[in-house]
Structure formats: structure tokens, C-alpha cells
Amino acid sequence: MYSIGDKVVCAGHGAGEIVGIGQRESDGLRREYLTIAIAHNDLTVMMPADKARTRLRAVMSAEDVERVFATLRSGRPRMPESWIARSRRMQDMLGTGDALELAQVVRALALRDAAKALPVGEKQLMVKAQKHLASELKYARGVSEAEARGLLEEALGRRIAEPVPA
Image (tube, rainbow, N blue to C red; front, side, top):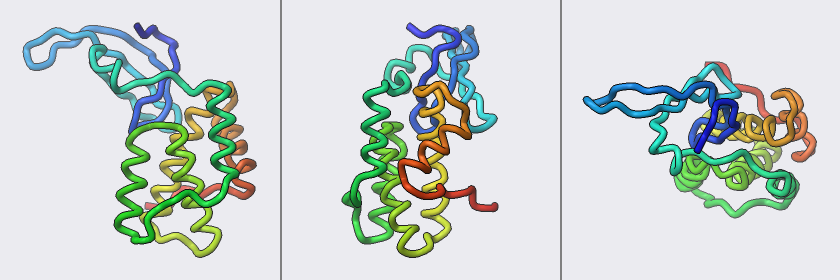
């Protein structure tokens, strides 16, 4: 199914590369695990291989990249006006790991940020969505993380958010 070196997207974490496949014992059962190095941070995810079918997907295609860029350039995505409902909706979209949904979150928050500075919670959400999207774009386009962020900036027509200090 998956091999070392495969580029994959792990919902909730972003894109990464399978760097290992091995056996581990968990709850008295010996299972095969995939080790995935996530691109945009120093995170390593170990996932049971039998769960990979539902929790991993291939990096987006060239056609999907163009759809993502079109979404980033498009008008305002439909989002709830209430901060609580909007935040919940965006968190749900981020959790899917779907590139088009990530692009909608980034676009919606970038537009809100351009109109009025975002509150810290939304700013952090925007940074997270941008990192996940850039990590996948890095593999889909075969570019560096910095170049992927530049492509996002270009599509948005502005400088993308910087991480919020802790």
C-alpha cells in the first residue's frame, strides 16, 4: 500500500513523507506502523498501517493545485458571522485535511485580516491552515517550504500571516 519515501497528507497534521515502516506491539497486538515525518515542523507521526487507508491521502494533483489557487484568488467564502460558529466551522474544515477546504479557511481569514486585524485565536488558526497548505504544496509542486509559502502569498495577493508569538 504505502512505501518509504511516499509523500502523504495526514489530516490534522499536514503533508509529510513516510520515513519508516515497522512492527510495534500495542495493547498486546503486534501491528505494522508507518512513521511519517511532517514537513512543516519537527513532528513525527506513527500510524497503524491498517488505519492509513482512512487517515492518509496522496498529495494533491496538479489539477488540485490549480483549484486551490483559484479558491485563494476567489471571492469571500461563505462562513458564519458568529465568531463561535465560524471558528467551529473552520476547525472542522482544518481537521479534514482537504486542500480545498484549507484554501477556503485561508482565504476567509485573509480577507477578514485585510479588513480588520484578526483576534489571536483566528490568527493562530490562519497560520496553522497556511502551514498545512504550504506543506502539501511543497510536495505537489516539488518546491521548498519557503517557495510554497511564496506561491500562497502570490495567490492571495498579499503577505501571509506570520506565526503568533506564544
